[in-house]
Image (cartoon, rainbow, N blue to C red):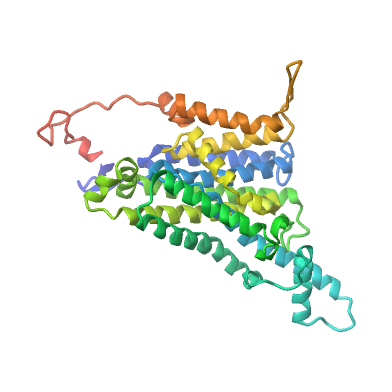
Length: 420
């Protein structure tokens, strides 16, 4: 939309004003963040527990990953079953620095009582022994070469998922692998990464994973109630910026091409667009978003292990987007938040068991079955998901037509509408 200034020159409205749904989402997210802060234990009145604030912070990170999934699947039509692998890579990248820095503090304190000051090599050997003793090793593997540097590990959060997605996508898209075959390939990539991480000689402590990530180096004196709020703020900020960026991507010509690729890839290629380049950009871009989401998620979870990168995690991500309504950014956020919090309630033992006399339903065991049935029901009876219900309730009447037609056909764009 454009406005007419006093001089008669058109001026374009700000992006948020042109797309009210973005402004509404950001306003709701801001209000939610303020309310949680006020009710939390860290800086508020203590009504909301620290553990639940961590759960909410992790949920916001999952919503950010769902945004990425919606961009690649809902808008571009690429059903990726491997995006949680990028999520896990981001978690491992920040987890390596957290473990290194925290262990360095412990080792320096233990060696400070020695008669002679410890050498850098002694400190390094002590850190390696502390970290890898659980898998029978005492030396740093090559993958930990940059773990001592926070800036380099933060760069790895973006570079490693993006580079892996770039290489994988280039190999897959240039071969024009599409549909279920591409989904199988992404799932195979995730499974291969998960199996590799399970090995003790992977350099990432095998099945033990990385633990103690909630302890931030240099902030040992700060209570977890305050640290949880800080991470909650960071997660909310990342989700807000991610939503704004994704909305900007899908709103213009690039977004139109993405939807066209989803609907009819052959026709888009016939029109002269480089379909592979568009798909490669979206695939790599969403991988970076997932990496950032994972880097914020696992310090709040406190631990990451190879099970977090298993293919089932990426399937869950697709289910969240489908239930929320793919092709709608707010639908992806709603689906991820709704299913994630509901899963926490059922699997955390908070849902009461249901006794049928001859059999007792324990939701801890039946939650995955309930989730699968919900996915099937949504696919068959409500393909637009929860977002479709919101669309129905917020549907606006068609605008009043006025002005002279600008085209020969009835219903063509009219003069005044061209300026809005």
